[in-house]
Length: 102
Image (cartoon, rainbow, N blue to C red; front, side, top):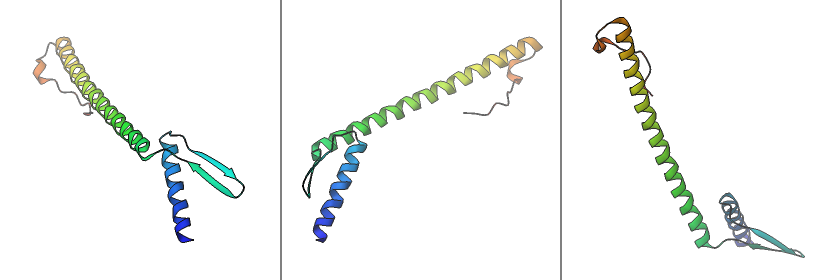
């Protein structure tokens, strides 16, 4: 009986993981007997691999966006310093802006 309970628990775990990965899971009932149609191990591994690759691509895109924003901020600061120096007829190297870093 404990083996059946453990088997049922493992099937439920596989069903939960499959659902989270948008893989099809079906349950068929005939009388008191319940049959689960679950994805294969290869299907689950393929879905996990796709998820990992997608996550890495998102991380790379986020990193690139962050670097781009930092470059834009540096350019903005430089332009403001040059503008202030021009307006005040001052030396641009004396310009400092108290703007927090990203």
